[in-house]
Image (tube, rainbow, N blue to C red):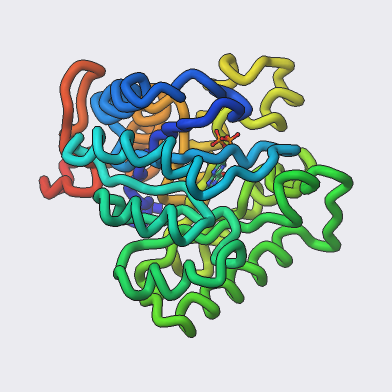
Length: 294
Ligand code: HH2
């Protein structure tokens, strides 16, 4: 693999929701969410993904006004925190206000299908966008999802959504792709997607993987969401080896260390970290300029 191992980028999750599956309610208070975001940056998050609507299986939709009420103070409080800000939303009105507040990435779990105004907004504002695969919608997506070949179908979907984005004026270079682990998928579908991740990576865009604390890890290990860090990291490290670039996680410090060591091990080389301990804020791993050491 040598120099072709991509440098991992850790995206820390900041859920400003009462009902997220693993940390619902923990960061609903803006001050708590802002403090949590700062802590994740200190742990090595290069991106903070801020969301005001849960997409857990069975979740009910939230209005744009409520989503904005939740996320805007948190975006304001985290501007200048030392990480890129991402807005986890499928609503153009929420994305627009978040971009005004400093977000440079729109993480749209509907892959521009949820709001007809989203593609034009992203194109016009020139930000990056993450397009994720989901079968159905959160309220119903885990009711008996079926595929003939999950990897081929997810790959075809992502390819078509990339084409759709480009048709609407979004530069292909701005598009990141995500197979949508747990979104309308059984445990076997999730595992097959992770096992054959290279087929998604072959689309040529950065691949985002969001396995953090998800229920398939609970099924394999018998652990509750807060105790799924080791399971999360196992999937992250294997996904890195298969070419994934961005890792959306709740437990940033552990994931960051594991990914840095895994990347160095895969490459047979390492870079001194500029991201550090849990106490200091940092520049991102993507901005490191030091040359590789043998
Ligand atoms: N997973 C969740 C939310 N957003 N975005 C991307 N790109 N990829 C994912 O896998 C992904 C995502 C679900 O996790 P979480 O935010 O912790 O839960 P909830 O949706 O219940 O808030």
